[in-house]
Length: 232
Image (cartoon, rainbow, N blue to C red; front, side):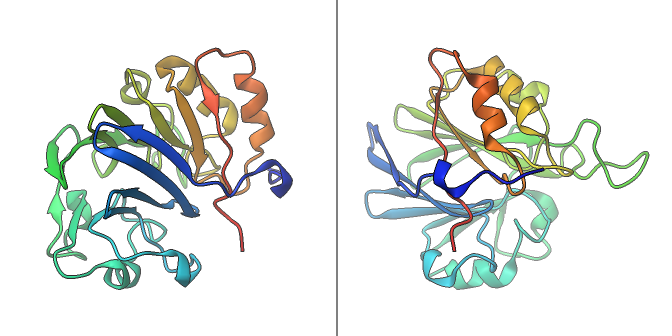
């Protein structure tokens, strides 16, 4: 698919007011992003392919899957510091022994943030017949309760019933790229089902985000923000 022109994207850092203070969303690279809350940093899926100067030391690291663009031990080790909490799916535990394993539907609190593991998986797409790129139960999306604010990070997924059933999400980061997850058209249909107040697409390499924008045109109550996760 044709890539979205860079002129259509923004390098802005989003700032969301929460009852725990201002939350900053910082796009880094592909599926890698940071959340800054007061003096704490939450880092999602650090990856060595990101520009090195963009990956901060983290107080909390969330891992979504075992694929190398999500589970990169070298990048995790570079981002961790004394006391860093690492949370991820059980499938990642062998490679990150001090990780706290969280299964689909399970909850945990860290840094005062409520963390719920949301299933992320393929419904139909896979490397060959009878196989899926992401099996149900292996990886986690995350629903974060940051004070009174709900933030959803989809992980690598298609439009699952669990995503469609989400409610009252203030900010959603939703993946969209083929062949591993879903195209923008499908992502738009899922977003229309759970209607986050703000949508930021991520993990969208090779996708045409104009298609997403067109599919969501006229949808009141959903603000689409296009951020550059691939800037050099």
